[in-house]
Every structure is written in C-alpha cells, then in structure tokens.
Image (cartoon, rainbow, N blue to C red):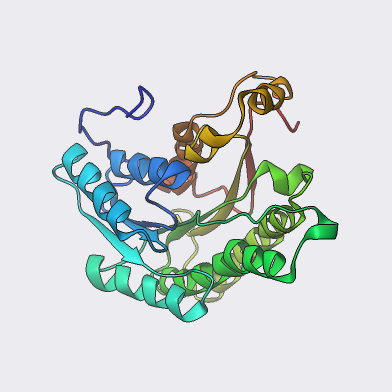
Length: 273
C-alpha cells in the first residue's frame, strides 16, 4: 500500500448510508475508487470479470482497513447485457439498494488500424462502451424509481486525444461522452415527469471522469524510456496516482454535487487543456 492509499480506518460521512458498485473494482483505478468510496462511508460492492482469488483478497483488504464497513464482490461480464443486469440485481438484493454506479471496467486490444482484427475492435467496444450502457441502463431504472442516484463513467484522455494503435480504445472511450450527456438528459426528464425534482432534490446525475496516464499495475510493464517520453508530454511531469482519480469520483458521488450532471471531468496533469 502506497502513501497515497494509507488510511487509519476512520471513515468519513459524505457517502454514509449509500451503496456503491464499482465495475472492474478490484485493482488499479477501480480499487482506488472502491477504497475512496469506503473512506467516505459507503457500502461498496466490487464487480470483477474472472479473477476470483484477487476479488476475495481485495475484499479482505477492505474489511481489514474498514472493520465497520460492508463489502461484497460480484462476478460477471459487463459486455453481456444479461450478466450486467444480473449484477445490478444481485447488489440490490444483497445491500437493499444501489445509490452509486461507477463504470470502470475496461480492456485494451492495441493494434494499428491496418493490422486490427475484427475481434480486437468488437471486444473493446463491447466491454468499454456497450458494457457501460448495459450497466447504466439497469442501474438507472432502479435509481429513477427511488428518485436519487449517481452514475460516474470512467473514460480516458485517449478518448479526447486519440492515440497511435488505439483506434478501438479511443472510439470506445470517446463514445462515453455522448452516452453520458444523453443519460443525464433522460434522467432529468424522467424525474421531472414523475414530479421528483424540487429545490431540495439531489436527483440522479450522470458524469464522466477522463484520467490521463495513471500509475497502475499496467504501467509497470512499460519500458522506462517510454515512460520518460510520456511524462515529458505531461505539464505536471508525472503520472497520476489512482487515488487522484478516485477523489474526483467520490466528489461527484456526494449529495452536495447534485448540480453537476452531464459533465466530462479531465484529470490528466494538464496534458489536454
């Protein structure tokens, strides 16, 4: 655990009484988001694809760090609509409600356009973009019934700037911008029609966070010379800590952030400005 992730187990109250689901929530940015939400008092469910041992180990870490917290793990493939909906149902069944959905699950299949196979394109779009839609659609139905909720999608600076060898990833991540704004507009429409908006409403909001280059496990395999080149293009001259992304996510999830919806939040050290 780095200095950025250390916590003495004392929990805040910004998200007390809230239940959050973080997809891809057992490692990297997703794990940092899960911890950050837990630090603010939320019950946290983490979604994962296939590594059950890692999921169980991460749950153990959360329970040790926050002994008074409530946590669960749910396996499923977000790229399959039925599994995504089943995950939402399972979280609601276990925790009694769902207040926060963080769509963090994502994959890469990097190749140049001329060498990209159909499967490379389809798999990335299905997980990163379609998976986000499936999860958000299922969560939104539950949130609109209750009149409150937060959806935060995790995109990438690659979706804003593009990147060599990542046409599929860039398309999937930029697609989240239009999806976010549409979901936000429709959420407000349905709340208005149901008479669930007033001066004191916290409503249902949908926003997206776009991290820059982040110091996660994936970066450990990148050659030092390549990392130095990347850092040279970042005004802050360093990679982000996962916790810096998580901080923005938990801010957007708080009740007092209810006037922020349909927005794209860049967290990239000034790389795109």
